[in-house]
Amino acid sequence: MRTIIKNGTIVTAVGTYPGDILIEGEKISAIGLAFPAEQTDKIIDAAGKYVLPGAVDVHTHLDAPQMGTVTADDFESGTTAAAWGGTTTIVDFATQPRGGSLLQGYETWHRKAAGKAVIDYGFHMVIRQLNEQVLPEMDLLVRDEGVSSFKLYMSYPGDLMVGDAEIFRILQRSGENGGLVCMHAENGDVIDLIVKKALAEGKIAPKYHALTRPTKAEAEATHRAIALAEMVGVPVYIVHLSCADALEEVRDARQLGLPVYAETCPHYLFLSIEEYDRPGFEGAKYVMTPPLREKWHQDVLWKGLAGRDVSVISTDHCPFCIREQKEIGLNDFSLIPNGAPGIESRLMLVYDGGVRQGRITLNRMVELLSTNPARLMGLYPRKGTIAPGSDADLVIFDPEAKLVLSAKTHHTRVDYNLFEGREVTGVPITVLSRGQTVIEDRVFVGKAGNGKYIKRDHYQLV
Image 1 (tube, rainbow, N blue to C red):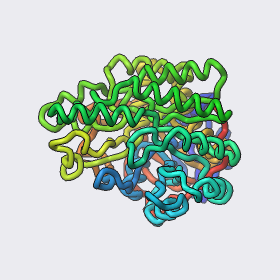
Image 2: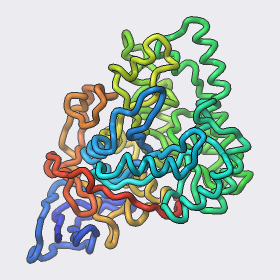
Image 3: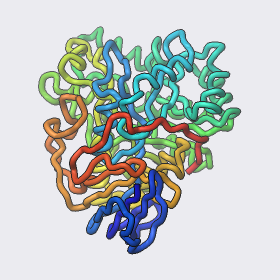
C-alpha cells in the first residue's frame, strides 16, 4: 500500500513546515515535496490542514475492574473513541491480581485486548503486592515482553496501596532492569482517616470526595516519591498531577537536576472543584482521583506545561456511567467508582484551550501529546514523531473546524461527557494508524483487531 499525504503543514515537536509525506506499507518512507502520483494507491489532500503525529495516551483504564464494577469501555470502544480524537497509541494498565503474580495480570490484559483494539497499545504493570515472585517477574516483563514501566499506588489502603519499603525495593529493581516507575502520589492512610471522619459526620455527597483529598496529601506523597527515587538514584514519573502544591515538589526536584517527570490531564486544566456543587448527584460525574481542584490551580498547571516542569498530558480515561455504576455511591461518596472519561477529547481541548489561547505553542502541544509520552514510555521514534522509518501514525487536523463536545456525539460508552456543550475549534478529520485509515473525513473506517500490541523499549529521558 502506497499513500501520499500532500499539501499539508507538517507539525512536530521541533518544527512546522509545508511538506508531503510518502507512506509505504506501515511506515513513513519519505518527506518532501510533490512526490509523483504514479503507482500510488491513495492520495490524501491536506491543504489548509496540519499533519500531526498520532497522539500517544499513556494513561488509560479499559475493561478495568474497580470498586465493584468494571470501566464502561473495553478495548474496542475505548480505542475507537481514542482514534476519533486523534490518538493512535495507548498504554493501558494491566494489574497484578491480589495474591497473584505479575504475569497473571499481564496475560489477563492480553486476553481483554485480543482482537478488539482498533489502534496500537502497550501495557504498564500495576504492582499491588511485593511477593517473592514480583522482582524476577519485573525483569522478565522488561526483558522479554516489552513492559518497561510499573505503576505503584500510594493510595487506596488495603487494595492497591504499597508501603514505602516496598516502593523502595521496586525502585531499586527498576534501576537494575531499566524500567520506569509511575507513581500515584496521594497519602492514602491520611486520606482514609479524613474520609472516615466525614462519613461519621453524615457528609455523604459527591463534593466530599474532593474535600477529603486535600492538595497537601498529594504534595506530601509527591515529595516522598521523589525522595525515595532520589535515594535509589532512578527516575520517577508522577501520574495525573492535579495541583500547584504537587507541582512545586516536581519543580524543586527538576531544578536540582533530578530526573522527575509529571503528567497532568485535561480535566485538571479546564474544570474545577465547583463542578461538585451541581444539583443532586450530578457532581458524581466528576469524582476522579485526585479530585478537581480550585480554579486557580489551572493557571499554575498551564505555566508548568509551558515551562517544561510538566512533561505529558494524558487522559486517565477511567469511565463509569452515572446510571448503575456511579450510583453505587448514591448514599456514600467513598463508594462512587473513581474515574472519568476523556480519551476522545484530549487533542481538541488542548489545541482549543491551550494553543489557540496562547498558553502553549503548537509544537509544544505535539511534544506533550505525542513525543514526550512516546520517549518516556519507550515508544520513540517508532511513535510520537513524523520521520522516515517511523510508523505512519498521522492525524490530518483542521484548525478551523468546530465541534460541540457531547454525550450525544462522542464514541465512548459512558453516558455523559465531562465537557458537555463546550464548543472546540480544531478537530481531527482523518486519522491513520500504521498507514491504515481509521477515521476518514470524520467517518469511522477502522476495524477491531487492527491494533497491535507494541513491545516497548526502555524509557528515554526528555
